[in-house]
Image (tube, rainbow, N blue to C red):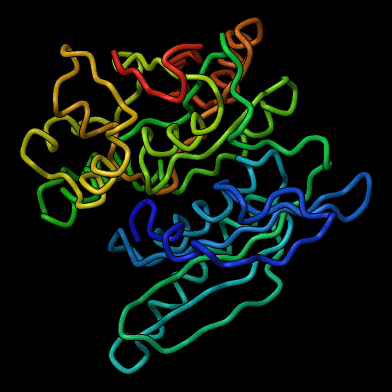
Length: 328
């Protein structure tokens, strides 16, 4: 589904309410949050998709890392997970499924997550993912909605997974970039989340299907603030620019551009290929962290010291134009 599709489908529907619901469907965020006690809130999320790499074990790892990411983005610690599987059992070897599940399980173990169950169906199209529950303190929940003028924006992973995966599907990607992008997508956002705990982070999200500009647009909406991005500082995967110049742009990037373009202004110096990369839908992308100017350098240094080597300060929150994104 593209940006805005779910909002249109849910338009006019009245949702159940509860005084302990901290974050629900009333606003776009990375996960739902429910207060259990004064000291404990649970974070719930779910995500699954079709294979984006040929290796079933790696696909399982990537799908699990992608699902776990929402918990980290909300300032939580993932604790339990349930498998979601759709599998074409009549024409695909069950060993493929075993490898996918093993990849997901190994990534869960790495995250300290316990697999507690799941659900599977027979389907013509293979799909895999997780439903994940995490814990946090009710006062420590991070959302997309707390931008403050003067804040700095830090991105923890390079962009380009959608474009590179399109090149992989077209048999045009090099062996080196296939290895790099597979490792990147399977990398947990845990280290970045652990570093964030020591700082007064104002807002956070993870970069996935709506691309950097799409997810940033959700942050500026109703914030009263705008954002200025420095395109030259944004980390990009090797070979991404070359593939984009060849026209290897996923359909999702065009949908993202169409939906979010009205609030984005590009400086004439920003080439079209860079614009495409900023709209590129990501799989298991990095965290986009909004933090006060006085702590930004220390957070960036801490991230790089924790081996989040691609972390970069990519922009700042500005007062005007409100709820717009300027890309220079």
